[in-house]
Length: 421
Ligand code: PMP
Image (cartoon, rainbow, N blue to C red; front, side):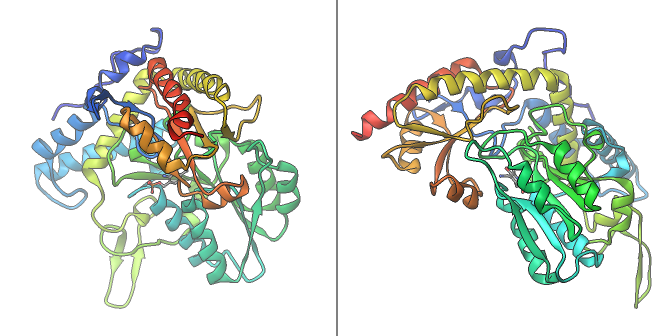
């Protein structure tokens, strides 16, 4: 078993997105006769060779179920799997026992909502507060929990510029609040939300905080204990890792207070025909065979990200976001969603093209080899808030170059003329 290595870039060298790009085989493909410009990393990231190799090496040389076999491969697989947990936990500033493997962020958020409900922490008339700009994965589980428990769901609104209305949050979060759930970075607006303010308000009210870190984990340095959130989720496939794996971080006392969501093998101490005792976290939340190869792949992914350096990635993508904005605002008929000034953001813009449906705009760009997301990006209420049903979203990653952004902006300028509007 060889372990995956990081990128050629080092923290000291100037950022070279083209060198990073060369580690991602798919990014040298042609699409519709053009070199691919991949601007859909918020939906899923591309994977470097180091990640593909790590999973393949594991399956080729070590594959075995973990935590149960007496044989050599099982012991080696267990070691790699638990090393991967320590690596991924360390990536978000956490201890290994604070990281629960999930199949993805959706699974993590459902786990949390069900476990909080099953713990009896939500009673009729209690309040669950979410923002009005969430991905459906951090909205619907709370709608369902409110419906099951008789709680009231309340929403922190957004200003017209896409920033959260923290004054409204301060008046919404109070003594009835049991949970405050919010995204670190919106997958539509790209703005980094005021986590410290939200955590302070929730803590003052004695509420549990749940943060969706899907759109921050691959793009900026993330220290979850320092942010003070109780629980947070992230998604492997959006951070250079494989599909089918994600992480749930929890502060130790919070995880310890929660009952399991799924039950079955690998999460018990003793079982009789009538009852079972459960292991402590994180195993308590990991019923059944876990995504072992994907977890090892995700560890390779975060080693790759760390090898490039999250501060440098954040700065690079901030520069790309600024360049993209400067190009887009000059194009007649383009309206950016969440164009707030002076906020920290990742490399992501969603926009409306006046007179052209987002799907038509997406097809036009695709014909030029440019991959973007169109639709409501699983955030329909957010789009309704900004008066549209769909938008075009361009999102960057560490492998996005200024040339990619320039080709994209040039192509966007051609959309309305092409459709005659
Ligand atoms: N939250 C946000 C902000 C997302 O962008 C996504 C993915 N679109 C999810 C949650 C769901 O993540 P997963 O695919 O891991 O279930």
